[in-house]
Image 1 (tube, rainbow, N blue to C red):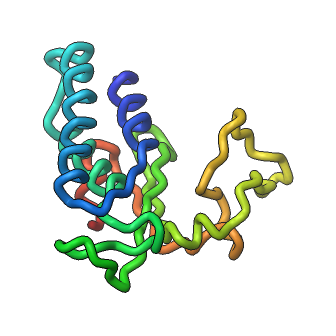
Image 2: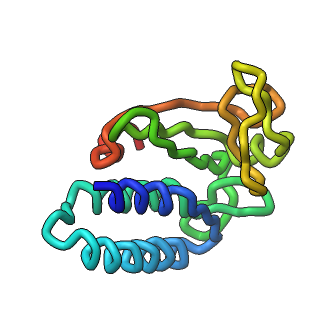
Length: 160
C-alpha cells in the first residue's frame, strides 16, 4: 500500500534529541499517535500491527535521549556518557525493502553538507534541503557504523 510506505518514510525523516527521557518518551508517543490516527483513517482494515511496530522502532532510533551540545547519550540522571549519539538514515532500496544506515551524530555534524557526486559523477538532487547523510562513505561526511536491509514492516527485527 503506497500510503503506508510513504508514511513510514515520512516518519523516518523526523529526528530529535532531548536530555530528559520523559520528554523523549512523550515526543515518541505524540508522533506515533499523530501518525497512527492518519494511518487508521486512510488504511482502515488494511492497517496492520507490523507496520505500527516498525514506526515505533523508527521513532526509538530517531528520537533519542542525549545531550545535543556534547553529542553524547545521557544516563538516567541526564549526565553525559561516553557513548556517542547514533542516528539512522532510512531509505527504500527495492520494493518493500528498507535500508537502515547508522551514523555517529558528532561525525555527521563535523562533515560537509554539500551533495557528493555519485558513482556516475552526477550530482545528487537535494531539492533545496541540506542532508546529514551521504550515499557514499567519504571520511569527511560522518562515520558510517552499520547497515541493515529488511522488509519495512519488519525493520525492527534487525538490530537495536
